[in-house]
Length: 495
Image (tube, rainbow, N blue to C red):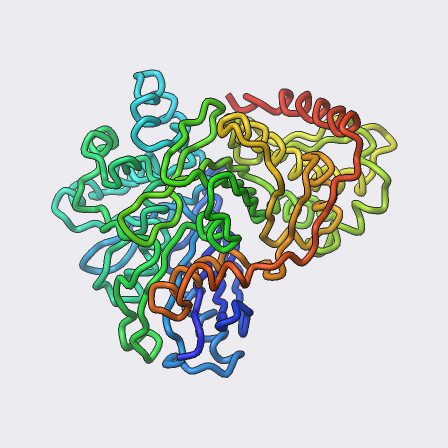
């Protein structure tokens, strides 16, 4: 058994990556996932497409690498997090499309709960802000709006899971209904201090306990694949939500270490050790990866639209043909020309939490071009990250020494340099960019002894490039001040 297989199920694609003992990628396959937009602000996926694409890319990756299923020592799973799936225990069929983490249909429900005074209780137990981003109100919506769902749930027929749980159920042929602590901590139903589903929260959201998966550590063998799935019984030994997996893959496992993942959204996590830090700046407190009963925590800031802004330039505006073209287009002008793009297409996340914000482009003149808009889109990713980091440093009382980065957009040198400039700290890009999948692989490999210790995988992490800040702090502050003015013009638009 020579390899570890990571399943990386994301918002825009399903991927399978095979890693060897050195942490190097031996094979990779990817399939795009088609989003469904039933109404403005609503975002869904077909759960069966999630499974079909994930299984297909596993088969493709193994074939590309010339790897037999019996050569896989273990499987690690990492996933888009708060996305909510409900399915029938007997038929195995979803009762509704998956409601994606970006979906805003339950913003009004969250407002009602806030008005009723529940926000503080929810934050104290879960560490989360009461927002439509998280799973609890999505699950309640499905139970309230799908015909017969409540009756079936009360009778024990329906199961709930985030995407990791759905994949585990499918991989094991319906034998295992489980999630890990990181994914559970994103549901609004889980007490992160006790490490258990909470009866008061279940009552508040009217969710039967029997729908909920078993909660397991992030690293540990929980079962094996059904023999008819991959023609081998392979241990499933690692599960973590994508951002938690990236934190682990970046080896940010000590208090004060910070990583930022640039994907569809942008997600910054700071490890805070065994003690949860309650945010005063509207960040969330979340579980970090575990391998046993000892808890671990992180502070997190979530930016809803990052790389998706570049996809919008491609698919919505048509000013680039491929996402890779955005760097050269943005670099064709020396600055943003006074143009700021606020990509609040699905509201604003941390630290603003405004579900009614909408996208805006401000500062346009007759001299503005597609290149200025492209540059403004890239810069918006860095500005949003800077907003989160400012809040995070204030909460933790820790000044950032460096920012470790990963995700697809880190290949954009212009963006990475601008990020270092506005933050005023070095931005460090690792040799292995696929740190989300690598984190899932590490979690699984450690559980089965493929890697013998944390120290062994620590030695594998290496920087590929360090972007040093080169902009004056006065200039950076001036840019951030104008960004703040642009933000104010986008807030509350849909209310």
